[in-house]
Image 1 (spheres, rainbow, N blue to C red):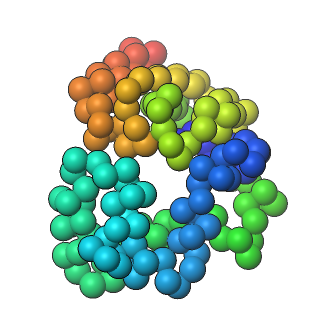
Image 2: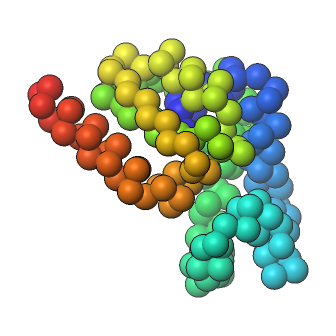
Length: 157
């Protein structure tokens, strides 16, 4: 994703795409994700071919990985403390944003606003055909983009 501040300025379309961030705030979120053989989670993950292995990992410990995943959203998008008034600082490090044009959860407007929240150099890599988890759905392209970025960054230092 792009810089988190961009989420809050990207408009209503991005908030609609990110429904799960609000859903994670509710105490019932974890049990709802697990109910009926993880039906909601499977739908949320768009029935990705690896969803069963993800569920296995998330199920290893009670209140483990799924709780931790939901807590990320709880910490970063708490509706009791809207982040619009608590913007994160600008990033000064060289930054790579890898994104997909097919992401059902992150809109291009949110990703495009990243440059507004950076003081350092920004490189954006679009990998078409990938979904939300670009590193999972297009690992070769992801790895190539990361290695190219690291090499270019190292050459500049």
